[in-house]
Image (cartoon, rainbow, N blue to C red):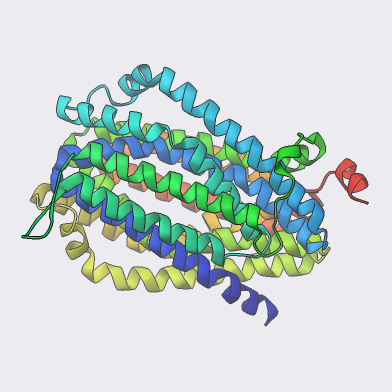
Length: 462
């Protein structure tokens, strides 16, 4: 009963946040789609790159979430705040470094990934990339701050910031993409539309706004987290070893996993602009379906981390099993609702029949597969990470991506001529194998032997 109560308390704000986040992304995609398939393809290609690093920052932030959750479970608030502070400075520096690196090598990267794209698509792609690239340090800070607050059990604050950030994004993006003209006897306003450039500026301002809001909350104090004496900061390797002992393997897993996704995107780009647009639209709708599952992926890290911080291993195991089952049920309900309206949803993104027909086929197959395999493949490993079992989840995730999604995606999609559908079938094979191996890992009990807080840090905290 207690697990159920904690799930409701933590999950409702996270689901609200995820719904809002996904809906804002969907609206952005729809707005780009109404400019033209070249615009939606360009933004989709850049977002494929951005998503690699957004996911990397989110997974790297898992280290802070887990360490903070363990300290909160042990009722060591001072140590939890110090871990948060150490993580914040580190991830901001990492964001700056990645921004610099990607800017310097942007031309060879884009030519390697998308050199076969049409000239109109390439033009919009470079514009969108260069403008949004500067927001990486701010995305890193937002991810880290949200992870720290959730580790302390505060899921409402990240929800509120995400909602505000995305409202700003949609308003600014709409105005800057399409322009606004208003004229009467008292007032005159005329803002021209900037298309893809406007979309890039709008989302960049929103990301900076979100990071500033998060920093303000951390410095002012929220729940159990309150960062003080920020100007006296010094790096403490004992804290960083514990944080990055979890965060770096998780981040590395995310990086290689999403590079693999990007390679499958290259397969699809070679199939033409219509295939690229259809894949992007299908992914956008799939993200709607994943909302409850993604929420449980976030919540399970905090719940398992706090349970193990209290040395309650049985509670941690019960939490993982319960959330995998409950997540599967929630996904089944969502898929059942979306299936009969899938064509209508796709038609909101594009008016081109070839794009609509292909995207509908992709979405409907996904709606069948998600309730069966998604939770075991994604929610369960999130719980294992909360227990510090990051190396195993990393190896299984990387192997599944490269052997199933890439190899089988290439064979089915290109060699056997199944197109985009073949690439997605390779993904379902990955889900099936990974989910099975994670369930075996949970039952084996080997994850119980992992240690999150390093002994030298525990000695320092005494």
